[in-house]
Image (tube, rainbow, N blue to C red; front, side, top):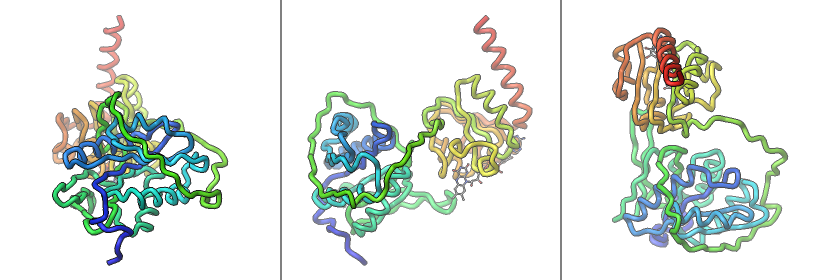
Length: 340
Ligand SMILES: Cc1cc2nc3c(=O)[nH]c(=O)nc-3n(C[C@H](O)[C@H](O)[C@H](O)COP(=O)(O)OP(=O)(O)OC[C@H]3O[C@@H](n4cnc5c(N)ncnc54)[C@H](O)[C@@H]3O)c2cc1C
């Protein structure tokens, strides 16, 4: 077995979170990880450190403290203004070698995944990707990462007790962000690193920010599956009436009936709406992980044996094509009577 760059016996009782920046602010997943890290480390008496990389980003440190960071390790450098996996991994390696954290968490975003994979190889440690939960075994100082396998049929608990740092990625929406404590203080550790232009391998030529929808923020989610036969127009009508957003299972996305950014589930978006209405969806585990934390789940399916009914608070055995126009009619009538 190849040894990691530092042994668990040399590691500090510190849990690090990579603070990813998106449009000048923290990515939601970084705040969620800080919050989860605070809960885990608080019980174990560990330190939570945010690793903040960028150009002129020191102002964000206070926000990191408010969400649970005890320390922010800041690497502020003109060459770090744009994410470049070579540059970012180069300086992160230097910080990790100094800080020797026991645990390092990153968001399972495109950049987080890119950085995590590269670092794990260089640090000669393991990487548990797309974890659905994290537990800290305080006595052994070991991070236990929950992941799903075999189409959700298996939940595995993984640990890499003999390698450091213990690294995991978690997708946005899996953990809940704590309320910020505005007056919470922390310590800023200003890291000086070696970084030159040749260490940066990519150049941002043009930036296109999609006008995409953020399903994680929708209070009401109207999801359609294969059973609605591609008729997402009627779901959009319903969503407009209840100020909701439309989501979908993978088959209609694959068949081109709806944009991929609206796919809900394990390889889509994980949401926590107040209400999730599901039309013509069987309830495969891959989909369920995307809505299981909704406050109320309503399922409409023609098959009384559909697995989704095991997860639903309200189960309606009915044809979606029949119920949808009726529901829209009733909601319209209700709205008109309110505004009359
Ligand atoms: C690695 C991997 C990752 C995956 N990731 C995802 C993911 O992120 N999200 C996701 O959704 N899937 C994902 N899948 C696919 C997933 O396993 C299921 O195949 C998919 O969720 C099924 O979609 P569905 O429920 O729309 O279709 P089906 O399973 O075909 O179910 C259709 C349902 O509609 C019902 N129905 C039919 N007609 C009507 C009607 N008129 N009215 C009411 N009900 C009707 C049927 O009874 C049936 O239950 C993934 C699969 C793999 C292998």
